[in-house]
Image 1 (spheres, one colour):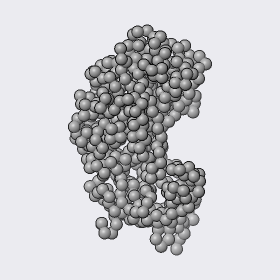
Image 2 (cartoon, helix red, strand yellow; image 1 turned 90 degrees about the vertical axis):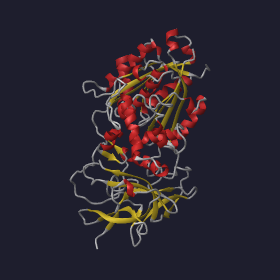
Image 3 (tube, rainbow over the protein chains, first blue to last red; image 1 turned 90 degrees about the horizontal axis):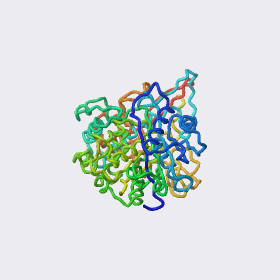
Image 4 (cartoon, chains in turn red, green; image 1 turned 180 degrees about the vertical axis):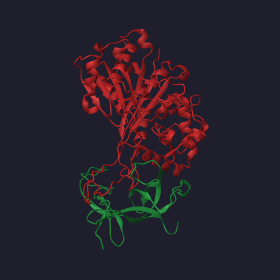
Length: 401
Length: 135
């Protein structure tokens, strides 16, 4: 191992659910203690903390968690980066270790969303006298949403999918197969928010939200937390053999934002930044798509997963529809994708997601994934994307012992 | 005739309603919003460019679940304008069925009154309909 390598030595995750009797500090603290137990460490062993959270990130969530798990005075970071929040928290810890400021750190992703629904808040109506006055950077006098297309999440990812579909001939059934697969996978994952299997026909017949996605093709909101403890190679060498045996190497950690593209002005481009992140991650890790034993990618909508088959180089260019038809991304296929159930069924507590993906991949590489274990998994990739946009990719490898 | 105001300031009303973009004088990138600088090249000088009223559909969705004050279903589309520029708007005068929207469907800009304020000023919105030849 080179001196620059970093390793996961502890990880934990709550079941994704709704926890009305807990707060986000409870969830974050639970996975902090879980990770310490997993790594045979304590709070005194880490010199940096980063907490990813979307909805309470301006409330000092990292410090609030410290007050429950140990106020040791170490630097703590409150991280928000849209749906890439958790992965960015992980990267914050990695950067601190690579900078030589720490030899061990804890990254947590924690979120409590409750039942906020698919669309977010409704437009305001104060009942005041109505006089049109241009507002904002577009000088608009009426709400843009609905009048000039849709920019809400279900619509954005539907249009992104249909751009691909119009260019490459993907069918509604092929999009639906993604959801059928991920819901089927989740039946084996006790940490998934939903563990319900649907037939393809049930998915096609469900309420259509934004074509081509029906309700089971959209991820739910939920509560949950996940954690990883990361150490330097030098620190790893000092740890107990049982800890080293279960250590998972982080071979690549890449974060990108969307570069300028012509259409980015009116529709976030979820593809280019993912392609650039993937190219960099494969280069840094020295592996290619053919080397991957499992992939956890950002299936916030079924249409998104299909795009990312192509963006991550899992299929031939333009061939994402054929790829899902082939069965390759199923748990017993050639490149299992989202064996956790994915965001569609495992759930998507925003701040937690980018850490939960690492929990999932690391657990398979350790051979500890139980009924859903991908046998013999040695290399895995975790991908998240947040609109705006930010993309994070981590490539993990089983310890070579 | 009542006073009219465009729904957004990049819609130009008049005999031939059309869209007008800010254009970076250095790299020619187009923007509909007020700019501090160019996202493509970082320069700060802009002119304007009048965009074509015709184009083709790059992507779409049929929105069936929306906030309560919006009428559904409606079609949201991303249109590549002829001669440059990409815009998002609703497709109108087309059935809300996926099968009617084919790759590269040619469309043209259309406008309508979308609302009236308490002074009687009409807000004019825009969208796209199939070009006459393709209808």
